[in-house]
Image (tube, rainbow, N blue to C red):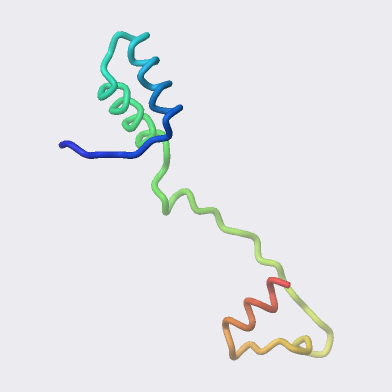
Length: 80
């Protein structure tokens, strides 16, 4: 399959030099690089790590200004 990609000039120049030094084609260099990248990275769902929950407690109930009925406002309050 043919495709077109845009690369920074310095990256393409370095890739062409590496391909010439290895006496291979630019296509082969890109293909090996993509295969290595795809093989080494776990799938997105496995990469996600659970973030620790920051528990917010206040004596006597909910803190002033926290509206748990408004999800967006609650997340904004938690992010402060």
